[in-house]
Image 1 (cartoon, rainbow, N blue to C red):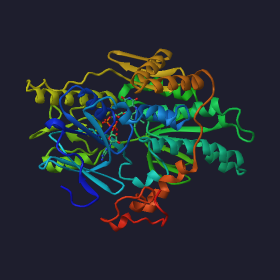
Image 2: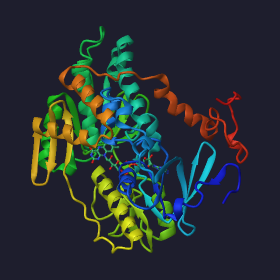
Image 3: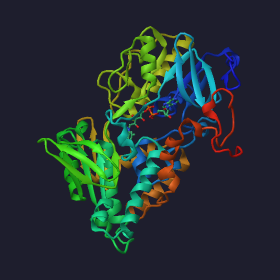
Image 4: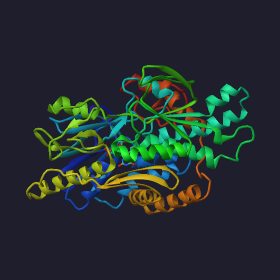
Length: 475
Ligand SMILES: Cc1cc2nc3c(=O)[nH]c(=O)nc-3n(C[C@H](O)[C@H](O)[C@H](O)COP(=O)(O)OP(=O)(O)OC[C@H]3O[C@@H](n4cnc5c(N)ncnc54)[C@H](O)[C@@H]3O)c2cc1C
């Protein structure tokens, strides 16, 4: 398979002739699948475009200065360091050849080809701007560490700029924060910005009063937290109002720019909100790999890019390809961590059984452990089986459950300490945001594909676009 110095087979024959399992993604689906195969006589290669396992449900706490990024994103190879049958390869999968049974990944001009006998695809989903990708520049989403750190810089930076501004309209614009999307992520984000403004920053400024900040939670739908049902949605809305979040429903965003956004209300009226900080928490689009697999296998791909799987989470005619998590479409299963975790474990067991020659499992059955969302300190909503409750008890349950799923003992300890600082005290331990975090994304976009090898050196022979445009020596 070697065609150039930049392209090489990722593995030679698998160790001991063991079946080769390639897992794409180090999120909930991919990591839990790899761990479930710990004792299986297989050779696992986990390929991911990020070197960490990201605990997405706590990204909003990184964005609002409660937690550090390291606490919610431990290195995947550290998690798997004792698992001898697993290796980790950093790289973005750009191709899957189902006929040749290979996966191609790329990183900084290096291309690797990973042959597989069994494939688990768990590449998750990204933000969707519903065809308006130009909004992303002004309203970052909440999907990655980069997003969270950029938002942290924008949120804290807005208060700093307001402190030195003199024009009252400009101060209002800087102190207006709009969160688009009233699902769990939007609700948690809006609640935390309110707490930040009203509690943490209350005494930190001299010219502005941060507690006067305007926090708006917008959604085109008529309900808050629609997946939690009307009763909990109404309670969440009341609690948000109590902490000073202005919830505006039936409000569709029609345009976003640097100064604010345009909104069309349910009655057809349009209006403008001047706001420096906009956060996009509406809509997801599954990984492009769904489309690539759909074209080759004939499996249906829906509008959100999710690929239809069979009841055993494989693709039609391809029992060796398992798709799990946010990328898969199976009935009405939601895009939540437990679906990915249980799907990853199910796929792992299917592989283990096939390798052992034992009969296949019954179809995948999702065990719904419930959903929770925090509104603010000491306040959350929980929907667990037939129980729907809110308030302090829901919040404590939320803390315990999230702590259980944070990977690593060290991270759990420091997370608890940071939570004490923020929830018992008023502080936020992680208020640092650098210019690179805020402006780096724009700079990278302007450089285009040329930025990749500028700092690390590496293969430059295949593509002129990989030239070092900075003309500096490699680091
Ligand atoms: C802000 C936020 C808050 C959330 N809160 C909750 C919550 O409170 N409760 C809950 O249950 N769920 C929550 N979710 C949803 C939950 O995080 C997802 O359902 C879950 O992460 C899906 O797991 P996954 O393995 O399918 O994908 P992910 O966890 O997204 O993992 C995808 C992996 O694939 C990698 N990858 C992507 N594309 C490629 C490629 N081309 N090549 C190589 N690697 C690739 C990524 O780097 C990543 O490692 C939240 C999500 C977000 C974004």
